[in-house]
Amino acid sequence: MWKVLGVETILINADAVWVDRLISLSQRRKDAPRFRDLLGQADIRYYFDTIREVHMFRLQLPPEVTLEELEFMKEFIMRLYKAAKVPVVEFDGQAQLSSVVLSSDEEEDVYRMKRDSRSRKKAEKK
Image 1 (tube, one colour):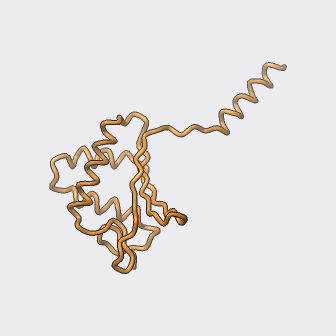
Image 2: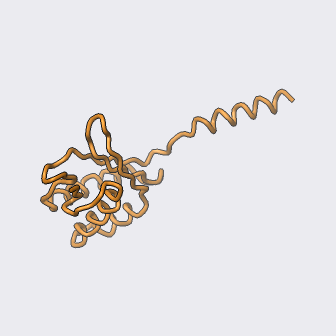
Image 3: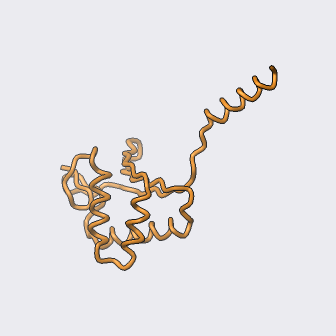
């Protein structure tokens, strides 16, 4: 059976279980409110890279989030992992590789940019 931070789950629910465990592990921490506030702003997704066999938790934060806040999140999550004393992801008692991706970059919509460019060119021709 799969476990995420010590809680049995199916991989479809891995992101929700991961967030719940991080919140419960952070309960008595000094900077817990700041962490939970940033976590609440994040769009959290779970991915499994089948080629490298790595479980990834991706946190997409708003563009307003600073590099300092991203560093805080990284360090806080690492402290929570250490406090948990269990693997982040495990299968049948065997620890699996995992990673956290933190980002506050705004993704470019290349399709929209090209479409807008074509629309402007058509309007100029008329």
